[in-house]
Length: 145
Length: 127
Image: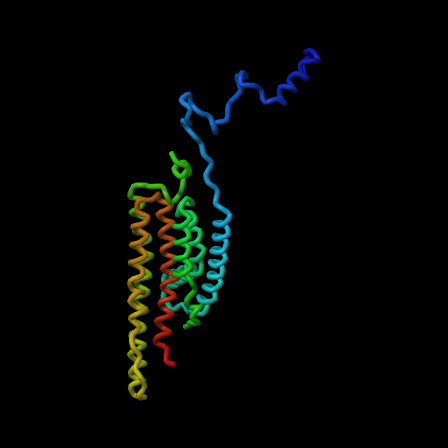
């Protein structure tokens, strides 16, 4: 510190520990709840509504089901042979099989990203559709070629 | 403005269909076309297999196998249905969302095609 009086640092410490008053030039009132002169909010900033606990549990259940589907698809895909001739066809066949067993995961995250969280019913409907359509039916029905 | 409008949602954004969308649609179209080609190849392969098996079964006096159209028809239609739905849903969305929707459709097509193929082969299996 410079050679000023010994009192100055103590005063600045007090200032630092106080919130100040409305007369303070640096005082900024919270934007939330601030209102214009006419009594209503001009630019309200509302926090996004958080996902409810019930919905989180529901998403967790769906995530578990889709993970089981991935296991089912891996088993089903292993029992289905690749019958394509040619390198390109073989690569595309492998890609198709890879996408098949990843399909439940892709669907789950796709629905969560693309359907707005403000529409939980729509999200659940899309997830239920995925549960029905993307079930590893060859594994469930015991098919294998 | 409501809360929903303040929060940016990936699925709620809108964009115009531009040349980038067109290129992506064509590239994914090629991938979907491969699935149709595969379905067609499976149909022809199954048809040849059934002809051979039915000739043998006829000689042996057994019941002839029926072509599994109930599985093959959806298998042939699935690439067109999934591509069409993905295109209609995604055409006015941002590029990344457009790609994401096509990837989802491709994943559904992969799973659906494998399911229908295995059902078709199961239906033509001689018990």
